Image (cartoon, rainbow, N blue to C red; front, side):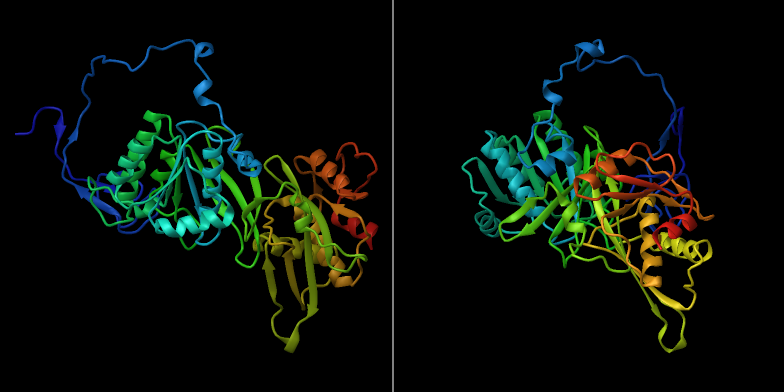
Amino acid sequence: MPSPGVKSRPAHRCTDCGYASAKWVGRCPECQAWGTLQELGAPVTGLRAVSAGQVSAPARPIAEVELAGARAVPTGIAEFDRVLGGGLVPGAVLLVAGEPGVGKSTLLLEVAHRVAAAGGPTLVVSGEESAGQVRLRAERIGALHDRLYLAAETELSAVLAHVEAVNPSLLVLDSVQTVRSPAAEGTDGGSTQVRAVASALTGVAKTRGMTTILVGHVTKDGAIAGPRTLEHLVDVVVSFDGERHSTLRMVRATKNRFGPADEIGCFEIGDSGVVGVPDPSALFVSRRSDPVPGSCVTVTLEGSRPLLAEVQALVASTSGGGSPRRAVSGLDSQRVAMVNAVVERRGRVKLADADVFAASVGGVRIAEPAADLALALAIASAAKDTPLPAGLVALGEVGLSGEIRRVGGTGRRLAEAARQGYRVALVPPDAGAAPAGMRLIEVPDLGAAFHRMF
């Protein structure tokens, strides 16, 4: 007989995200994964009274809580510290994800070297490469140090033994999918194993005050592989992006408990490793003596950092009388299609029987609406085969009725454009005061913008 307060009924739990369901369903309602709900035979216990237990520390007024252990310690890599909100926090757990070969291991090896040189022992555990391979990379980028320890392990117990022996201030595990916990079931790299390894290392990091960086794999669509609970367990989630044909790398924080979650760091990868780029605006703008049709410069805002970016467009006659083509690179294809329709309808630029190609310069990805006006001007300039004036920058969101709307951070955007030498800015109405040496041209709609420029 089951005891009072216990109701025996089958329960099902998702192996990817942990979602619990009273009955089996083919697709998890939480993470949308197929075939991941498994039946659990444990009974479901009802509510019972819970008596007061022992506390780990007495509650204190918030003003008396010490901050020494929660302050970020800079790593010495300015772009990486910018993304993290100042540096590494003792006891924090970071998850760094990115495509294979993008430069994650090289950057984190340099971070470990900087921390070791600053005084604290660091431990790098590689589960994908041998110790000799990592040593060769360290020699290439100049990251050899007496306090930088290296191990190649794939068992969680061995990793914890190395932590006990070295007592590091920073642990780098590359990667979390390659380490297996004998206490958990499932295949190597599966959701159950990844969750068990991450939970164990998180507990050790919090107990010892050891900063831990976990390297994670990504799926085909660029998302972090493994259960979503992995992202909830860690304190900081960092994504490492970059095109294979470009040396530029972008580091973004999608989750950060110790700082802003929208900052971006720019790096350039080369033979000497991954080097920070403190002023990346020059990488995204073409340098030419004379303006050409189909090109316009805008200013994007990544976190608190304004970046100059160039949008290019090409309008050509459709070959063979077939359907017109629309090709996009570095921009949001849905937004480009919308701006293209507004340019044709509201700007009275004929594009129905023409191929339209739009791209960004330097491999930067532009997704915010602030680049709408620059994109519209680039398309119109290419269709009319008329270049825009030199030294022009355009800011503004384009609505379906053709109106130009204001965007956030206009002052910082214009200040960055003025610092880079741009003297004329096409902006929406009420854009604020112009920076020194810059002239603002306010346009209420797309028709007025085309009239002023063409």
